[in-house]
Image (cartoon, rainbow, N blue to C red; front, side, top):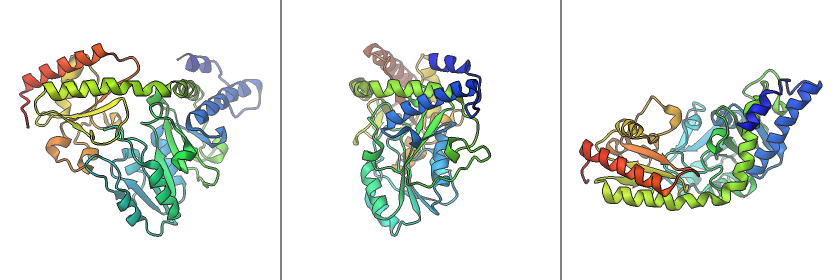
Length: 350
């Protein structure tokens, strides 16, 4: 908030050469350095965008590859980025099937593969570096949507093996409406927003200086605090243990795979996700179903469907996310509210 407030006073256009423009440009470039630090890349690799959705579209549509292979659990901004998307299946835990990826790739010379770092609904961490190696062996480019994992997992662009990587400010405590695409030097990225030549010709449009400033501050903080993010896993595990013990029929989705420390996907068969969300909201707990970007459009999760769950489960799952400010008391309060609601709603053991 302090960074955004300060940047609001830098009213110059960062593309202008006068002193006011140069002041705005310094804010943008300082932020670029912090975002680059979060991803482990040179600042020149950072292309600022309006958020993760634009960055995903820029990656998949701007890389110039005719064929696009993506995992079936990707965010809709990947799944709907183009008309020629081909899906790679996942297993029952929501982990991308690498054998299927390898078989589908074939001669991948004109292909881009997109596999997210961690799923936004289940928290399941994907074998990104292995998927990237398969893509490169076939001559394909590799894109990773790292929006959900940033700030919770240590990012290293080169270690992951990505050619392109998406980040979003609001997932790490920054302002909404700011994001970035990390692009390796060898990627010839064609702009999908044209007309001004900003961001080294990769994304036209006057930079959102306050949003970028907030993104930079959040990235700097996330880089410093990522090592402690794993502490949330103990709270998450406690929450899941209590839910399974006290709420008949509840099940944890993706529990058989490595997951982000702050994310739990809980299915309560027979009770719609929308009903659960509203009841918990009235009790003071904000949870979501599917992607929060689809708010107001609660529908069965395509992620759970891809994992093989039928509609009775996919339409009855909520996502519970924890943050640094949460405590054991929050877990106790949530479980009590969820248990009381489940009793009123008539939840029964499966």
